[in-house]
Length: 176
Image (cartoon, rainbow, N blue to C red):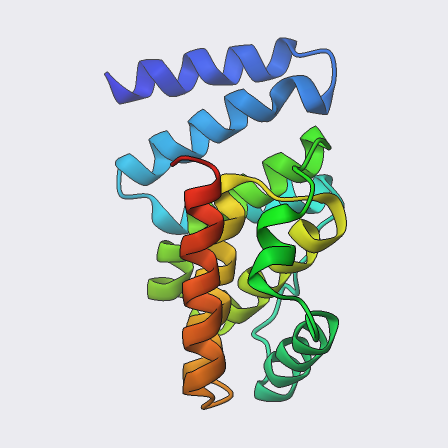
């Protein structure tokens, strides 16, 4: 019974000693809400968790200018990064940032359907966290979506293809 599971998760979350102790339970709750078709509630829960992890997103709709600026800032931070650099990058050891990347990667498909203006913000945030803190397998999905945004937002097919290809190479480096 779905309600019983959510009640059980709520009890676990209430008895956790710290926010970090709640992260796995919160992720399971998000997955359960999603499986019940409560996509908006699931997405809102993820944005709440991300905010608690220090990764805030705008509450109101984002403008094209914000999207473009975010893409351009990320693009400039990746200037000169090769596929070899990406694969050789250190692995992410910061558990809070790992959860942030995992949660963002999880909601990307739902954001695409329900709040598409946030797609590039999520992709850029995953890329920026991965560049700063290290790579995890979910980083590859962030780079893939970043490449997609290059094509759809910046209309740069060649660069989008390059990042999509790099995402596959990164994923392969994790033996996924």
